[in-house]
Length: 44
Image (cartoon, rainbow, N blue to C red; front, side, top):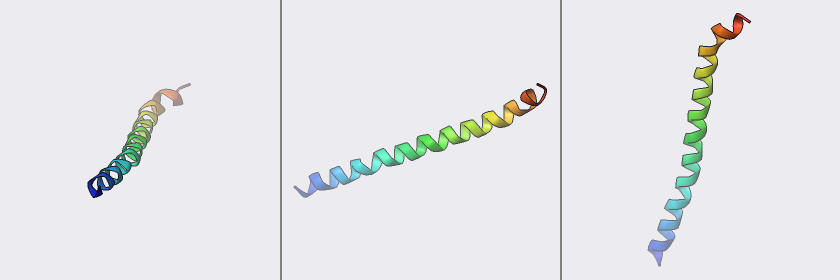
């Protein structure tokens, strides 16, 4: 019975960690995209 409690607490921490990781990479990609597009957009 205690192993089930441990398994659910371990699984419940995986989802928030995955959400934080995905948001981190999305923010990094948006920052990189903004920096690389800035020379092209400044010509407009």
